[in-house]
Amino acid sequence: MIKLKSFSLLFTLICCCSLLTSCFDFIEDINLNANGSGNIKATLNLSKSSTKVASLMKLKSVNGIQIPTKEKIKSETEDMIRILKNTAGISQVQYSLDFNNYIATVSCHFASVSALNNFSKALGTHFKSALGNNNSYTYNAHTGTFTRTYTHSPVLSKEYARISETDRKYFNDAYYTQIVRFDKTVKSQQHASAKISSSAKAVLLKLKATDLASGKASLANTITLNNK
Image (cartoon, rainbow, N blue to C red; front, top):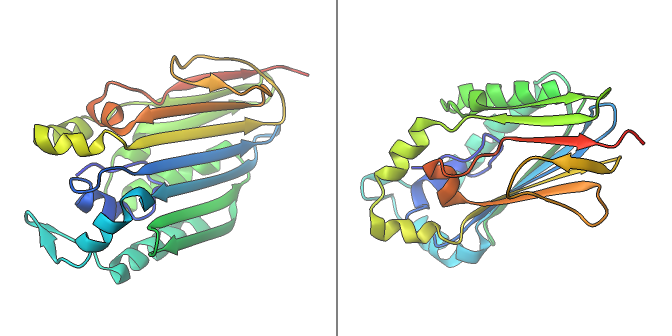
């Protein structure tokens, strides 16, 4: 079972059905203001495999792995939302669960980058995942530097290694995408796979889920903004 970042909704379903789901997308969209506040929207999209997921959810278990019911997913999501609403610096929380297309979203406003880090740690503790401690952000408004620190968890590699070579092919079309938008133009960014938008006010990073799971890819990056 491979767990995504702590923001991912329907995490239980993804963990249980990933072996039978040919593709999914996790998209993290961040809008960062010059003062360090901003908004974030996370989307987990299984619509490309909605037929398979729908069939899977009719079962109680697969290969000894319990399949969560819609009620269970709603309950876990509501727990996550309560944590989010109770986190200092987080407001305007909204979320949706689409069980027709299997798309889940959560969005909120954060007063500072540290609020995002606190939320990530809180969710990591709630879901008993180390990922909340392996990922963090810093932002220096004076230098215009936005940094993401990321350490690959050995647990991910261990769990991924348990998947047979035959079943790993089902992850080939699964991706993690992050878009970070700024008020100012981007001067530079350090991730080899990331791209600066044509407007120079956003950075796009898209990675294969298999590369993240195996540790071949990293989410770490430093983005430097122009002062003007």
